[in-house]
Length: 313
Image 1 (cartoon, rainbow, N blue to C red):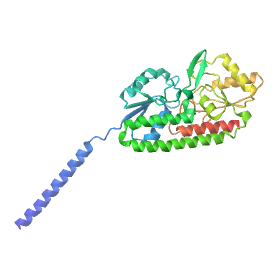
Image 2 (cartoon, one colour; image 1 turned 135 degrees about the vertical axis):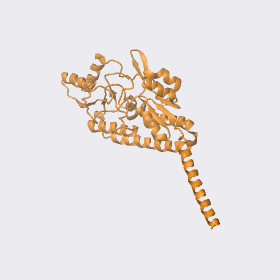
Image 3 (cartoon, rainbow, N blue to C red; image 1 turned 45 degrees about the vertical axis):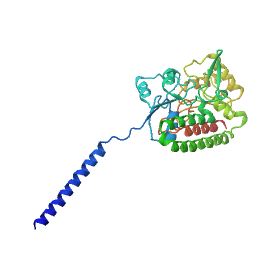
Image 4 (cartoon, helix red, strand yellow; image 1 turned 180 degrees about the horizontal axis):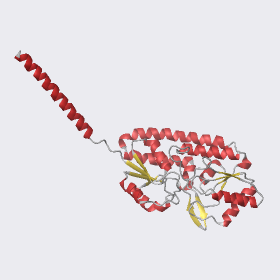
């Protein structure tokens, strides 16, 4: 009887110790902090999407310039400087796109355009001064080079994920090739005599060269420049000369500019439609806010191409 009681007590003690040990182990596991993800700070929605395509949720991504805002006019805030300072990696466009933040970005960040062939970078002559055109993303071949540059930086940041990042990069580059082929097929629907694109500012010259569609804009490469009368007159002359029936507003510029252009054409006896309104604007310097049509690079480009074709063909 005493032996049986002893065995029962021993079993109960062992069970109790097991429960206590299990509880303590769960407590220790719960108190162990999760491995912290590295932080990648990017300047624009284009780069935010690029990082997402290449590494998904393996990093924490911080965005400086909100989607829908004009990067040409954006001035960094105190919180932005904190994001840059605390980042494990900073990616930015370069080519003076982030003009008001260029000094701090050059000190801390990596420009995805830094290895672009010089002969492929567009320039303008404004008042005798050579201006670099930063809107390279409308040339898909250059955007692919930017993707490869970002991929290399992300592989350095996450060496244990390098193989996976390389695979995702290859898949994404293939999708960009498919986008380019789709653009060519869609744009071919526009008759030669109608293949002219009028936009508020000079954001589509890489697009023009890639797909052989002449573009004209009353404003220069940066939206912080003034629209002078000569530029307006030249654009009106261009519209009338080529009998252009549709001109386009942009998501990050004031649509009133194109309405004034329409009125100027009307005063000369012409008639042109302004393509504008929600879902009817070209994306130029930003993607759409997340969750909206055009919130990825590929969707943005497809939106633009469809809008241009539907209104010019």
